[in-house]
Image (tube, rainbow, N blue to C red):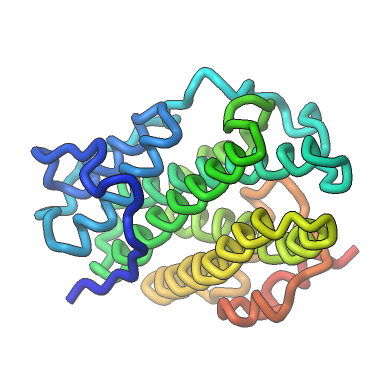
Length: 285
């Protein structure tokens, strides 16, 4: 039985739905092909609800695009060319932070949908799709929460430059689900667990409790996303008769272009079932 924890869909459940599209990969590809950020988030949430309600009849075989569609703004730059976000620089600093996080969440919607559509040859159980649809739904929720908060601060997503580093990780791991799970949830999302509590503390210190509350929602959900990544990474290692720790270290060294660096939020990582003996080895000098 499919079991999927969903939040109430905002602004109308059927916004942007494609009623004739009854297979999952077709719906995931439709999200990837949607350029409007708000609509992309809503399509992801409706897709998750329809899977949960049994309205998506088949998994399908639609192939995802090499790159998702994007709006004309924000302007994408190299990571080093995007200005650093400083919360203590008044409203502009907080807007820059929330804008950067919104861009991450928009990419995260596409990353979840790409996993749903790209790796159908793996013959994964329904629970795998339950989990990644939950991720897609929650990433959509996160984007909408951040977008709404930007509006309250007099800004909007797309007004500041952003970088394309997250999708580069998707391209690097497009050939293998195990590599994708090693890098995206277990490096990139796990890094979010390390840095988000400090951002929350800084927002609270400048009395932006509304933005802090949004990040608290995101932080709690992301623990679950890392747990999902670890669960299915371990599952695939089992089916391929591989040692999870040694395989993860090898795949990260091969496919992740950045650094896995401390400080680590060991408590949150432990809650996600991601033990220190995996990642601490990569942080050694």
